[in-house]
Image 1: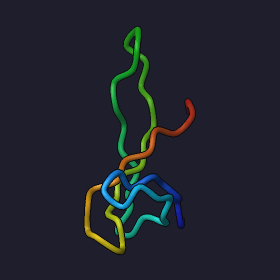
Image 2 (image 1 turned 180 degrees about the vertical axis):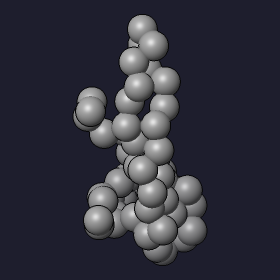
Image 3 (image 1 turned 90 degrees about the vertical axis):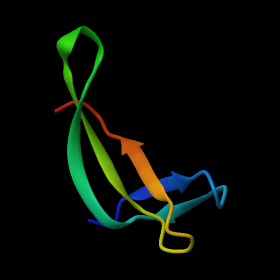
Length: 53
């Protein structure tokens, strides 16, 4: 999928590796989509909140 996220450790936008889509609880009981993966440079966990379904 090649989702781009922000790595807080590197302080740069990078393409996530080992990414997968997860669902999280939003305001008012709404389900929100999110992508989680790891930074290819430092290995830190990255997280990106996506739009509604």
